[in-house]
Amino acid sequence: MEAAADDVGFAFQPLYSLNTGGVVGVEALARPATGRIHDLLRAAQRRGRLVHVDAGLAAQAVLAEATHETLLPLHLNLTALSAAAPQLVLDPLLESLGRTGRRPREIVLEIGAPFHGVSPKALLAGLERFAELGFRLAFDGLGSGDLPLNLLAEAGVDLVKLDRTTLRRLPGEAAAVALVESLVHFTSRTGIRLVATGIEAEEQLSAVRRLGVRIVQGNLFAPARANAMPSGLVTAPPEPVAPVPLTRAATPRVDDFRHPATTLPDDATCDDVRRVLLNHDAPSGIVGIDRAGRPRWSIDRARFLLDLTGPYGHALHANKAAARLADPPRTIRTGAGALELLDLVADADLTRTGDDIIVVGADGECLGVVFVTEIVRAMAEAKIEEAAALNPLTRLPGSDTVAREVDRRIAAGRPLVVAWLDVDSFKRINDTVGFAAGDDLIRALGRTLTDLAAKLRSVTVSHVGGDDFLIACGIDEIPAVADTLLGTPWTAEHLSVTVSLATVVCAGTAAKSYREVSRLLAPLKKRAKDVPGSSWVNSWPGTDRFEILRGQGHDSLRVPNQVR
Image (tube, rainbow, N blue to C red; front, side):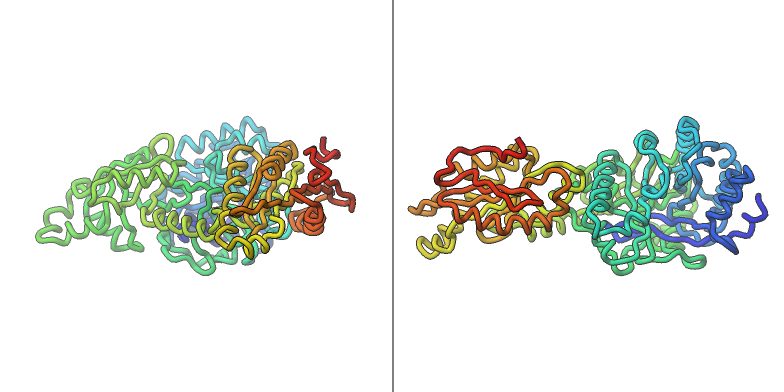
């Protein structure tokens, strides 16, 4: 190993799940006695020794972490050049794993820059070799490095880490918000786990939580430390982490609640199990796995200790196979939905409804466990959160829903129309026929908007409050929306009712954000209400010009001429 690399220590920083509040892994960060690790690696690269130094540091990190016995997945950093030459890395790494009793499936190899000059074919082959041996794989530094997007799509890694340089721009920059949203969508569709790194401010945490990121890392939670390691079974996170409320937009999966599993070889004895249960931070259960990492049995902590501490329990079982006091493993595939897990629990024997569920990969290997109570609690909180956010009259969400959609489409450069619907003289309706009739009218409008959102692919609706509604949709769909809203004969009891529709067409770069569009809509709605009858007035960002497209004397419904 390089002499300079010998004089390197390691700090360890945990990764937290925002769903469970628990630690889901710990990253080993190399700390040279002088200078930065990047300088050390660049110097090694100039001498043609990068892979050797990289492999040596990974092996050293395993030995440094072993003294802490965290039971957590250990994240190790490798450059893309090292990953493309797996055999040069594997020899020292496997030797360290053998000395510490660690297994490849407990290691996450974070592959980082530089990717330039590395053969994609060799890199993919190297990643495949690591995966064959059981290592889990991640890409590091997304957003600041030179990771090719096609490699991200082809490699099939388990995890992607979004670099702090992108997250520093949250929540103020719409483009950064749109970028994170797109990555959340990509990782959700592909089953990859997304990590937000370098979280140092409450505002950043709030932003990534809202956007659907489930795993975080940064000094806001715990800085990297050389001598302080997190427990592998944290049940109450350090402030300010709290479980993320789930929304309809973010369908929960079992992987969002996955904890590292406490495992033993499937031929372990009852005494082996007892020592693990007593010597570590009280795992709720233990999984017995075969040489391929597949679960063969599972032990529930409470039932096992009850059997072992009963009359003659220790004498009868201590040196016998743990499998005799174990249950068949209850497994669920990675990527499964939380509702699928609840179905599995509902079909279980009543004595096992609270047992840990083992998450398994494509080859049946154990990837971790989920706690049933956490998923039940999270889904209950999601329902409460969802209900609290809906207007009690219309069951429509508030303005935040349209706001997010407008900002997303503007950042993506997608043309759209933002509309404000308002009932004319709504106070007079309440004063004349009563609040109940007014409520019935608002409910009818809400049902119509809900139907439009269900029928038209790009329509998003919100109930701002009172008689005000917001709509975002594609330009090609605004005629159908306007025709439905303005062509319906609205009534409250015996009173005929008219409505006003103000729209802003956002095409090109004139519109910068939802906030700007909302400012344009306010005076435009007033102009629409000045037009007799049910009316439609349209305008565009960057101009004071407007068109009256519907109203008394303007009865032909037509598309704004700048977007035909």
